[in-house]
Length: 414
Length: 81
View (cartoon, each protein chain N blue to C red):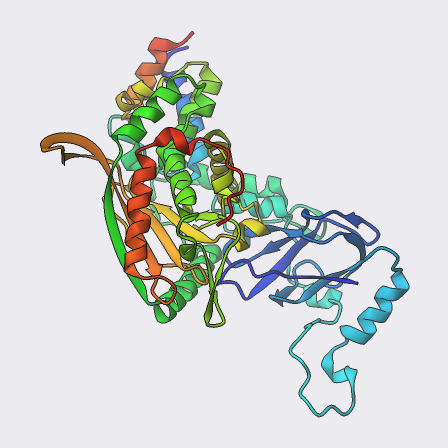
């Protein structure tokens, strides 16, 4: 029997609302298949299932809010039947009170499972289709103000788009410069960031380092590359920076991983989380999975897709739960350097400022060079400033050989 | 295509990337990226959208000339196929 549980999609998530099931009892589920859409306080997420099986029972209904770790569904392994699922449910998932009359030890805090949702509990709540929810997030439409035209007053994609169009017309008609009313989503997003960042600053002894990196070679190489490429395949400097970080992490694995239960766990993959600012405020840092293994063209496509899906609210659960370090690039906002706050349980964050032309001394000569300031915020429980400094100098060296970054790497033993 | 039509196309591409622009009053002679919060990825998508709709190829070397909405429109009109 396979328990499909609500995964934690980040340090700032302790519960989630099931929006929609994408599978039904009897369906076969493949590894990595998206089986449900769940709303965290930050965004709607496509939740993947990492085990193969046949759906036996869906235990949580749409619109139900449950804690992380709740069993959402039972999946049958090969050779099991529906009767096995019923038995398993009775024996393992029954509410603790009903389980055993006399127990010496308190009931394990394990599988929380709510009684099936009754219709009455749903009264007053309108169903909202996931696509409508995503579009509403994209268009910053407050769903509370939208009248649903679907069955049971469900809010549909069309309703959201019409609401957005009406708002735009209204704004155009009256010159009323009304400040955007913060929506629930914004307030929730703020709360989630506050929780994660407070935890970070409370628990993680940060140290900070910065290093200016000459970018003339890297930018010249990029310009040369981009001349030959169609517009849709041109590379942004951000991709080169991300790849350089991923590659350098192979040499400094103590910056890539998690600090959990009083110990550092090195991650086996290099999945940099890319900080993406949301248009309505706040941010998400979904992972660019296995960035160290991919060439620049692939990374560029994936980054572009990741940013689009982050803003549209259609990230996959693995992208939110598997970032092993965060990379933030505030260069576009025009600041010279950024010192980040580590996203727990990660142990490091690399920041890049804007690429700025500066006077630079090389070989006794003053030259004008494009420079980017790279910074490292790292967890002092896991690494020391000396290693952090070596990481930044190695990063600088990698960026002096941009052509070596455009390779698809074999897995290196690290 | 007139200058005004090109401007409407440019605005529609912009709104698809930054939905909040519909509400804002955009000053066509002021730097676009100061008024609309566009990062380098948004900016690339804006130019790509223009390329798709108007079939104008925009070499990277020309990016620096495209500062205001007026610059963008003039540039596109001159290069329309």
